[in-house]
Image (tube, rainbow, N blue to C red; front, top):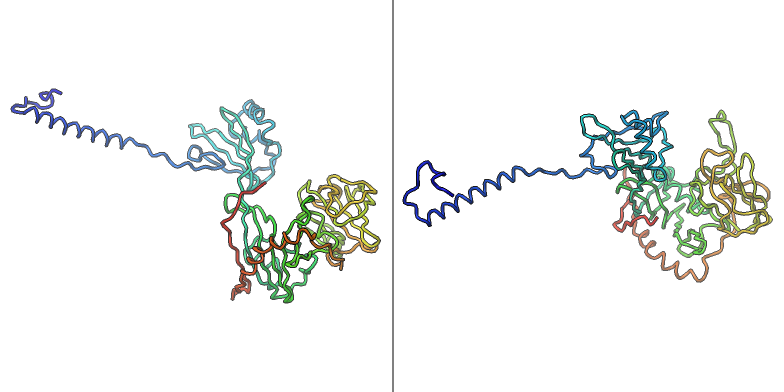
Length: 442
């Protein structure tokens, strides 16, 4: 470096050591200046804000709902994508994502580019909380249906009845559908239409969640305790027939809570409409239209089980019943199963309790998927839940030891749940989320 070029006048009397020292000082100063300039040039990259797997930071995001007459193609054309491009998108997602049926009122999201003329880059249809359909509309066209990861959480709840089981659940913030599950567990032993003030319960159950906090439904009750009229009654879920996958509930002495008949024709029952001879229907001018069956709601294709051993005496179709099956169990009892998607038995066949005789459907006069279960005693249709039926067979001797071991941790947990009455409402609730939540095995 020429020092005479740095200073306006030549430097006199500067030793070699001084020159070197000066250059080092000058070099450090220049390096520090360059470091400062480099730091000024650092650009902070925002943390990705993922929404349906797409970074919101890179797009303008708009939310919509399906309107009457909307189709996938119409939505894209209204947002600046011409039909030839729409056709190309549809061809690219054929067999991967079906967007032919969009439900009125359900939400969808468009991700627009941040150009001078914004155009959609992604279309996301999300009618439910557990899954969504995402389609990339530009360049590398693709579509995918994404099932959100879910987890099953074990929960505990307890309550003291003030008026009804449903109101207790509702007022306490417990998932209200748990009412139906609990009433099914004790369907043969407790009349839930005649509960008394002060009756109380404890439940250990599982519930499925997505996005950590959004519930998509109760899974099952694992154990319960119900005190009715001062009489305590335990219930423990247990697989009583591993080969057929039959799950039932037994008390702490291994005695079945059901009778000779299964509590319902589905593996996991949820009653949507009970036997009611005084039922009034608004559609018919609030006139009495007796309902002589018990409806169990389930999705189409759910296996329907014979509730007891017997012989198939009818397997047919009528306009009202749809596909149905009638089983004669003995000289006293017969059962019937309506609205099947498909029958799995023929007239004359002998079926065993728990055997699949058909699948849930919507055939005949029905507004939704369910099985209507009808029950005859001595030739007269009756409410199966109000009959004094013989006890079911107890747990097989070879399973008793396994059952005894199985219930120990659950009984301990139930006994440790305390009833802490709230002064203002008289309702006690405990709902604790466990850390041992596990991924949904399905």
